[in-house]
Length: 317
Image (cartoon, rainbow, N blue to C red; front, side, top):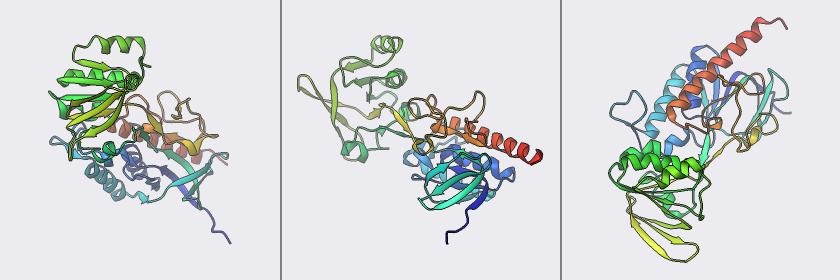
């Protein structure tokens, strides 16, 4: 005989700055939150080394340590943090949102906060993985500061790559922009900005063969896909800007999303199209993607969920 589903007042799916902040606020509001950490407990910051742009840490902090602090605070205030992966949902009945964890455990939640984040797309080469956090990064705004005055490379041809190349050009000595095709996908305005920045060198039709260095990034080897010519450039930082994939597949069919899979929330709120289901962090933010904005949206989601539950309790059945 199957076990009866567990009933939860507030279920948070995913950790990271958004999920843990939502948990802190939900716990303080006595919503008895249950948080499932997901495949990567702590989110993308657990693979980040130094974090220097989060307020409150004047000397900076390591990403994993920062996420551990977030988690400890959520637990201290009463959050039930669990290791597990939500694999299926059914949001067809308001107030009884059904969620399955690891394929079997069923939970019925009065409110759900989605904070599943987004995963950076990578090139898929061995040296990229090996040197991740040691010169390889998927966020120029987060990590560019560490390479001020140095030579760096960035891969990508879209708006994000162009914006990040422009950002890096302000603080770095030289920026090599590796574009796979003979044109960019970025908007004309962004293309003109990049092309008119003296210390950005665009390498068209270029693919990365290998990032060189034993323990830190020292150089990059690329080849021209039209001529076959191989080139090697000494660099200290290698940035990948070929997009992110929001971790939202399990919500398809219930939650409204854009064509990239980012959850659409109602203006000035974390509310989705499903009453009682809220979204925060990188699962719904494709513009800023910063720890501090993710935390802020986690706060919003918890406050929205609290108001939703309070309203439900005040309305006669």
